Amino acid sequence: MSATALPAESLVDRYAAMAHAFERRPVDAVLRGLDVVLAGAALLVLAPVIAVVACAVLLGGGGPVLYRGPRVGRGGRTFTMYKFRTLRADAEGRLGPYLGHELTRLTSGETTAVGRALRATKLDELPQLWNVVRGEMSLVGPRPIRPRFFEELADELPAYWQRLVVRPGLTGFAQLRLTREMTWGEKLAHDFEYVADRSVRLYLVVVAQTAWAVLARRRPTA
Image (tube, rainbow, N blue to C red):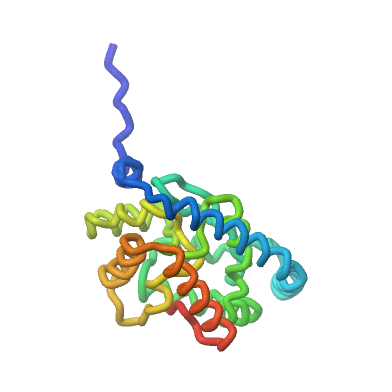
């Protein structure tokens, strides 16, 4: 009788073990408290806006109102990230194999009229406040990435696992500084800068700069 082969360990699993062994800092608990207070308050204040956006998405292209996608979180745990739907039905199946500039180019052709307005104003990101309250995300940190793309990028960039030390964020250094010419390695360097230097002051600075960028209708991401 032959032995049953054990499933191969994925890069996500392997790097998750490394992230769990990474030293936690006392400031992480403080930042988590700020996440709960700020995201919870934002959900209450923005509840009317969220309701209006949900109706606009529904009227502009039918359901579903929310996009739900798997993302790799802190310590390699996979969670469901929420956004208001901005693409045509079944667009993710058509866009799934692509990454980077090619994904950006093809996505523009799949975006609905309502979706373009939501992306320009960043209102499509509002449901992620719920991910923050649940503890799956933070207001500030590296952007969450699909498991498949994590595997690809981690294979090319061995230090990529260090992103798993903190919760993925709604915004971060890489998003505020991002340009279309920036490589994945350069984006990763900005993520590492926040992971290494994270503090209450830095967290509040990134939140304030992101709020200003959104209110000024300047896109913090490409």
